[in-house]
Image 1 (tube, one colour):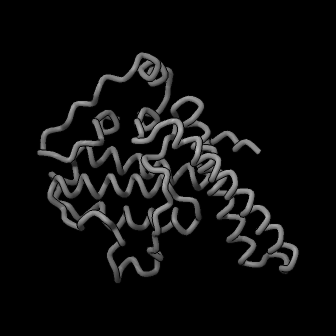
Image 2 (image 1 turned 180 degrees about the vertical axis):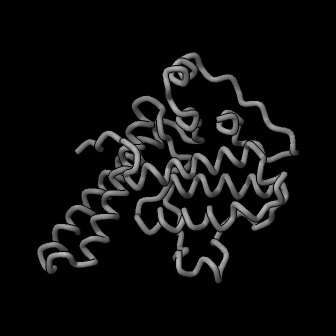
Amino acid sequence: MTAALVAVAGCGGPAAVSPPAAPRAARDRAHAGFAAEELYRPPYGKEELAAALTAERAAATVNERQLGELEARSAPGDDRVRAAEADLAVRRRFVAALEACADDGRWCPPRLDDPPWSYPPETALAADPPMTAELRYDLASWRALAAELHGRACACRTRACVESLDVAIDQLEPRPVAVVRGDEVAAARLTWARECLFRLRGKAALRPASP
């Protein structure tokens, strides 16, 4: 996919930005069949990643305990239990992605924080997604929006976040004029955002998170 080989950090003029040369190991992995998204270099280091992994494993343990307590006092098929199960599954997949990032540089999310995000799918036709970047559709603004969508999608820890980011991408993607919408830098970011959502839904193989 040509778009996925374009550098994603640039927000300048219309010309495509050439990506920096990948280290030898990264190039070898790419030729061995790794998706281009897996070569994305996040803006954080090993210490930040290790701290995030510790925090997310602890959060998953809390979620597991809360789910067990909810199951103990709920009737079979309770909607709250199903919602808690779905949220725990998403968080476990996020932890698995962080582990893959720490182990061999795969599936690294662009950000480690868990920014507030509320965009219920049923409000999508009545309100714009609550983006930090301006909802403008010149080239630089569209790249900034695509980068934010990528970052937010890959940082999801709940089912509601995954579902609402999917809706937000669908809402915003058609808005730029064709020449801007076809920009490879922004297109790569949106592709990677969707790949993150796909994995967090459990639609792609991820090795299980460590206990």
